[in-house]
Length: 202
Image 1 (cartoon, rainbow, N blue to C red):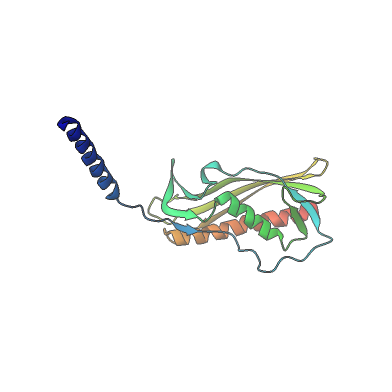
Image 2: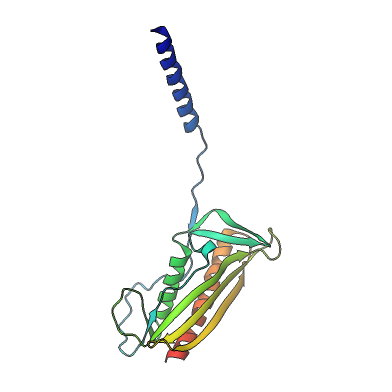
């Protein structure tokens, strides 16, 4: 009976030691959260009876940067900024920025699942959404946002396609300045998209 008891005691001692080791592991630092894109207006947008209805189809978003991590590119190497994330996946924040920009436009976007007839369909593909360190890893980077848009009529005939790109240098190699540059780049690209869509559809 002594040997089984000794074995149980040894197992218990090992388990206790392991549990102690687990509790002593260092905790990871919480990530800082950031967002880009203009916040929506506090008051709901008034109805626009004469607005041109445009259905926004599902587009693509650069896969490496579509989630909540902030992608950086240095030469041929890609990495994510440590302990810094978007408050939501970048793809969702970008779609919100597009929707908010069209709120004051004579073009009314209809999202998937919404009811209403539409005269045009708009597809947007975000092909670049990244922090580029073109001058080295320690220099202030440049934010690159590149968007391809395609507008078609409801009968699926093409109206036109266009590429929009913004390259905004950050004022410093710090996350706050990088996020500020992202805001400017997104506003630039989305503004060009709205202007182009208005010209083509109205």
